[in-house]
Amino acid sequence: MPTIPVVQDEDVARRVVELLGDRSIATAESCTAGRVAEVLASVEKATQFLRGGVVAYQDEIKRELLGVTANSVLTEQAAQEMADGARRLFGADVTVATTGVAGDEEEEGTPPGTVYIATSVGDHTDVVVHRFDGSPEEVCDQARRQALLDLVEALTPPL
Image (tube, rainbow, N blue to C red; front, side):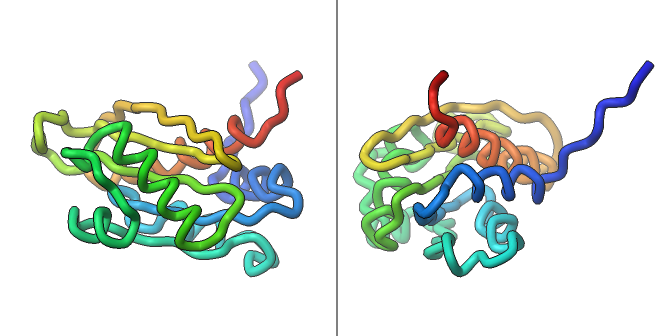
């Protein structure tokens, strides 16, 4: 039986950059703690497309810096507002935002492993809720990978 090649996050990040073309990108991350921006920054000539990123662990940072107005910062609305805030803050064409619960315990009624990922291209933002299993580190890694995959999907033109 043939083996399926393992695709590394760096390969997915390079695909994101290909799909960006001449557009810029920025991140707003909570539960992924800057891991998405880190992988994007590892792509050659990152300064040509990566405008910056915010790691917003504290609710007050999400609200004050990114403009989150949602009652709970663990919601689809909060993820969308984080992505929109990153677009305004950095003047980026494309943004990705992550918020959720990577820890072992429920927060604000949100079960562990629940991650909201928002991708914003131009004025259109999509938010998808994902549920991951594993340790906090494994949840963060899965969320990073999924955020990159969600970006590929958002940037891929329809057939």
